[in-house]
Image 1: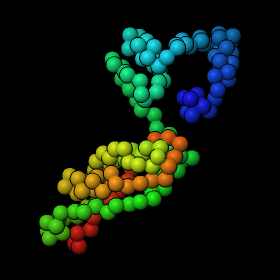
Image 2 (image 1 turned 90 degrees about the vertical axis):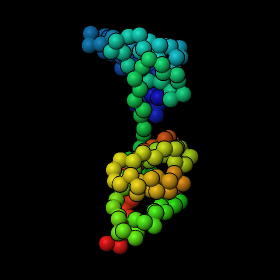
Image 3 (image 1 turned 180 degrees about the vertical axis):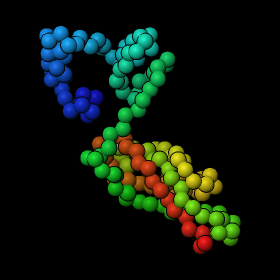
Image 4 (image 1 turned 45 degrees about the horizontal axis):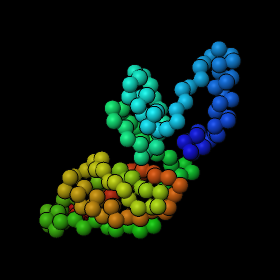
Length: 155
């Protein structure tokens, strides 16, 4: 699945690529493993090794980097947006601003995670509660988006 989703290749084309590298003396065939667990174990014990495994794989002893693929180069369409409910004291004191959040969107369009990137923590908490209720159009894979949410307190 990784080859097709992220590299746009199948196993045969990747094997042909590496055979060409070996034949020309420019490279070696990569190690092959029977399971994601074997890949993770090899990477854990081999300095400088990298591997690609499913996100469901147990990865004790290795550093991880999650790969997200954007949908056809564009942003996911927001279908349902819930507006933040900010504390009344902010309005009363004319406290406003813009909050930036990173949103992780599941393939089915639900929001999996929201992380505050910038802005007031008080505004951020209210914004994150609302964003967790947003629904995006379904896609082929998990994606992330950065969203700015302005709050005008009537300055």
